[in-house]
Length: 395
Image 1 (cartoon, one colour):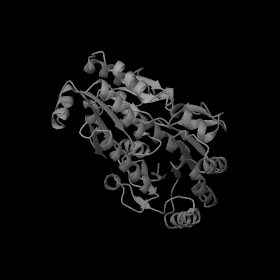
Image 2: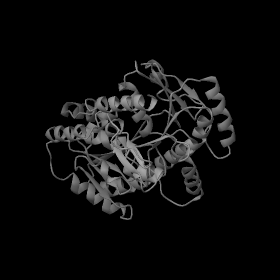
Image 3: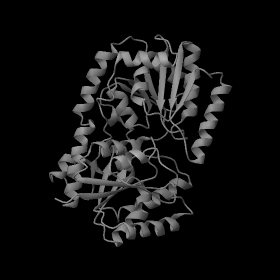
Image 4: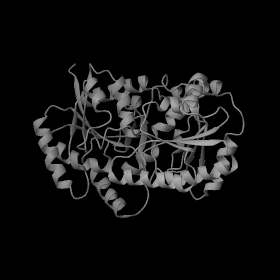
């Protein structure tokens, strides 16, 4: 059987949720059977660029897919396909904006066009109205639909979306116009395993004492991730427990993300929390940093199925998240939910109650990891499912 050539469309390939998920699959898929290239909408070098090339893939750059650049994007994408023929599958992570590429790809005879849903945005501003418009147009041009979870599937593909396991789809058990295939945000559970030795090593390196309550957060600095409210929450925690600290992991590259991160840095300073809040930037050792945390907090305004929460559960970390996060991600019953309508002091009280009881983290983490694997979120297994899925589509 000939190697299947897949072109992955994605905005960037930096260290963030959807990008990390695609890298997990690239690292673990059988690259003798599946070849994956990446076309990104940024001109600057991506965080994962060197690794993609080491793994045999290629990464190409195009203009951003912003209003005002739609015409340029269509022209560049058409030229790209003319210069790089031979793709069997286009797998787009651009959600409703996949419409632009898929319309061209359909005209140029690319038979398989997979639209991938990652999030469930909310609001009713002009940006959302535009998203809803392109979401409707997308349905005509995608041949297959995948999603990270139920909320994302229903947002991009409609309330009647019928989410099915990838293995079941490949076996031909569930095929209809409403079928959406679950592509799991799977992780390397061996990498995300808890160790007391690692916890102590990280805390010692960061000058954090054993008895300090450490709150963690992983995510790009954006309005949707809501780090500003997180600072308010931590300020309230710190009033009640002076032996507390917070790790903020993540960065920002587009101008709006850089601006928001600078706003958070100012807020930390003005709140008198400098030294307590550790802004760690983009990191490659998130698995180790999570082992040093006591709780992960995610007060997002909108989410899909965050890979961060899969990682956190695999490493035995309890989590407090907003009700924007889907309930289907709670594989271990160690995720608790809170409304953003509740104030920062109420979130702080919940954090303290969740971390008050001493737990055997080592034993707890083993049980949590087993549950993550049972649900199919071990990347070695999920990558085999994706390989079979691509073979089925291209067959």
